[in-house]
Image 1 (tube, rainbow, N blue to C red):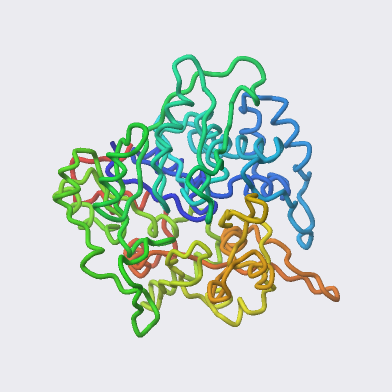
Image 2 (tube, one colour):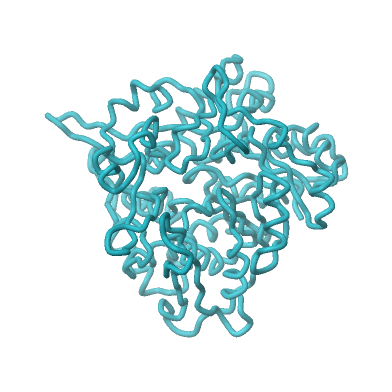
Length: 484
């Protein structure tokens, strides 16, 4: 078990390069599994300049599937800068074969590249709320030999069973996962089904079951996962409200501070002794990204810590270079600021936003953007007319959202995270081209409350640092640990 788990952040922030370094050095590198199909398409459209996609495609076991995707999306020498990236259908209960194949291949690629050149385990992080892609994405990651699956942003009770089915001793079996549908009765059929045999080209390879780590925010949720999950839960990651990205909302009635941030109270505090009594390994996340934090976690009985923000700004992460350097400079100068926005995310979960000029953290920047929903990972499935499943997003155009039964008040302050997170890593969509003027999707960066603390890794006059620097520093008070 690792003492340090590198968090699976954003879309492509925790990319294969970052995860590979962390795993090579003996801890757990984790790739983000969010929107990997879109990330793969955009890398191919940019011409695969470093050849990484080509290497991974050559390793993919189903050759015809790989060939179809490569031929459709690869652009030799890359697309024109002002040309939009290719569009694909948004995910739904029953995805077309082509869309399913994109999920399988893209998840394989990211894990394969993270594992390349070493034998240590690599993890992948998924969001439970992004349910429509779970089955083919998990299968693709397991095809590449992923060692750990991490999942939060919901209650992933049925993911362990999916892992068991795909790791059947005689080969992967068909798996099911029920899509949550707002307004649907309990017996409504919203089950997604995926049979690996439908996508095989020859005999299916027997797969190894990865360890499953559930990301939880409370003792109650931890206990629920262990008692009600439909398969083995191998460990827990406890994320406090100081962690970056989506946070669990406060328990009880929402109250805001004078600054407009959610107020967390005593009911939101976790009792470590109760967590310890559950008898499974656990890691502490949110505010533990320091040598003292790691030592404290170990003294409390944890297996270690999960660290996100420190790795987010390492050289190997996928965060755009200019964004990274500007926020590192702000941290070094003591002016880095993170705001827990109760409204930004269409999920309704609080979302931590790093304030930075020129990004959608500035209301005037986001106000210039025309509302649209063209990726749809955070869409809400709801029971529409004639008992059919329909989809809506509170960040889509307001008239459209209201026409789908959404409430006007739920659109206030909502932001399109899907497009913004891709812009964060250097793949912004072209969102308008009027009178010869081209506009690109603005970024919106998330980070933990300890953003200012990344300055601890900028020793001397250095302006940047590496993932190895983070590990060396974090392990400095645990002398028996050494990096491979």
